[in-house]
Amino acid sequence: MKYQGGMRSFKQKIIESNFTQTQSKKSCFLFENILPKEQAAPLAVEVIQDMKTMALDNYFQSKLFQKKSEWEILTELESLPELDQEYPWTLLVHHLDKYIPSMSDIIKHFNIFPKWSLDDVMGSYSTTNSVTPSHIDSYDVFLLQLSGKRSWSVQYSPKDDYQENQPLRILKEFKPDETFHLEPGDMLYVPHGVAHEATTLETGLSLSIGIQALDLSQLLISTLSADIKEFYLPKAKISQAHSGSDSLMSQKDVVEIRNAVINQVLNKYHFDDALLTYLNQFQDPNKEQEDSIDLDKMNHEEFVEMFSTYPLYRTELSRFFALELDQGIKTAIGSEIYTIERKTFEVLEHIFNQNLEFEIRMPEDSEALEIFYRYYLEDIFFFSID
Image 1: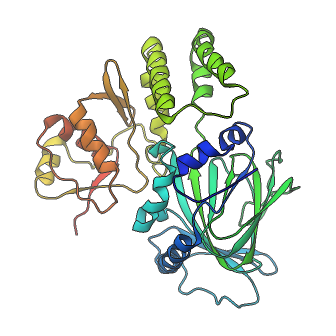
Image 2: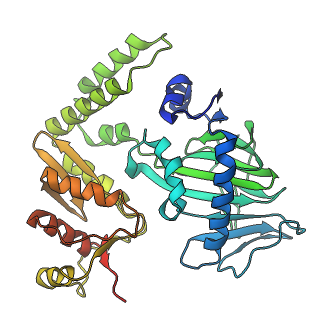
Image 3: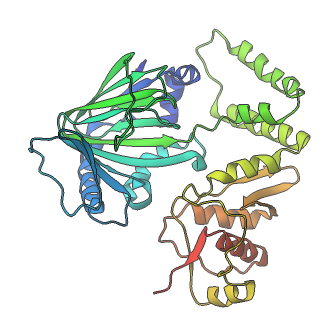
């Protein structure tokens, strides 16, 4: 399916299109001209230049792949190949949202999703005739074409079976059900579990915005008792009341219903701690789970002394989760659940909305200081001392 229109508001486009119905069916959806070409063109130039610079710095996560006689991946690049060489290639750079300020203009259009669900914003700069082999992602992805032209083929019920002895994840069998052609300003939604393969028709840049495919309803069903059916009954009635209508509930109605639903379930079943513990596994995707605290960590007194002189910084990809319930605001750090005051919540929310260069200074509030220390013990906050 597809939608045609400009990018006044991403949320508005979802309301105006049939995207919500498509998403529930796990089908792809094409948004044509969602970003005006006059906005896409200068953004593409800026991002491509930044990506080329980042690719030559080992600090950033990037790779270049191409197929000569066999597929190969190049990392730790000292230079980039020429555009007109015999073998087409694709350059991937991850986490552009963390390092390129202009990405915030793109990300703000995805605020229909929780901030913690944003998995990655990856740039893909590919030359004419280059191919991104067929693969399956575990997250939903929005593919936004900023420059050049790209063709995407998708298979809705693929076999999750990959070729052996390949540097890339390539499906053994790929039988496309549908093909989409993207030009600058177009965007394709691909649900998790759908196999997809790209062919670059004209050298250019596309952004891949990954969204965690977190199915809360399945989590509830698997964790709560059979009484959950009684809770879901109002949802069924709402769906019946709106069936056959082209109109959708307002965003305000959706938010109010969602908050009421969450509070009803969590307060009734004391499910809040379990949910926070579950969400906490996404707090820092790169962090390996450990059962004990690093013995080299400073104790609380040493931490406070250091903090009085040096600022803290937030680790890359770290995320902040909190639930506001009748009994207060709760958050998870490591394996522990904490109930925090609203002012502490607002401080943490502000910190996690800043870029990685933001300096975290000593708070006046003792509760916030204790939470900061807990984040330090979990390697979410750290000191950077030359």
